Image (cartoon, rainbow, N blue to C red; front, top):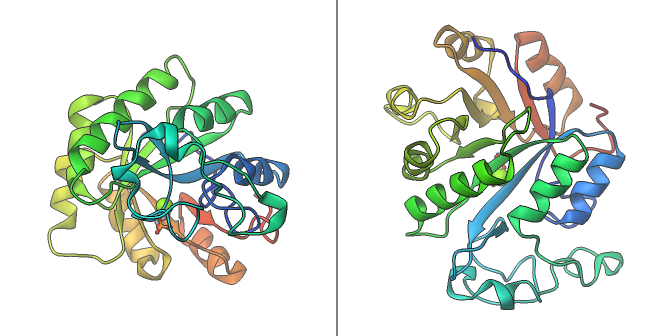
Length: 243
Ligand code: G3P
Ligand code: MG
């Protein structure tokens, strides 16, 4: 396997349980707890701005309503993405991908960018995020790791910026996933932790792929996976687990 420059522990959605997920406040909190690697979800506004949001709609985590793919960034940037979490985070904005890049580069933090397209925008989102990531991290020691559950998004990322590392996300071990991972030229496979065990880690390593898991919040589970040879764990529990 090739050298692996990413820390073992990554904070999920920034550190998105103690602070509003996928906001700069969450990244700041994770960094305060000692985290030097993060996972976040990135999608596109109607006018093609890459920004952080998990859901396909704005409803759960912002003051907005409906699909972010039907609104321009100028309007999205004015939304409150913090009040849903707690009053202390009122008026926390949705961050542009470029702002998160700036934070990570300034603080020596690695980033796993989950490409999370709104339905129907898989290829456009994969290509745009890859192009932006290559521009923002140009000359950096550690490039962002681009991951997705959507092979179509990773194909577009590969065709746009073949030099950026990619990972396939798996919530189930669907038929043909190893062939798809091979065709995508991934450096890692990131699974739901319930799917991962020593046998799968060894199977991935034998193909030259790193093995990562999401979202591990239980210390004994983490200890077992570390003993089994896991390469990375994505967690919400930045307060309980010191990287
Ligand atoms: O990237 C791994 C993990 O974030 C996938 O699940 O739904 O939290 O994006 P989700
Ligand atoms: Mg995610």
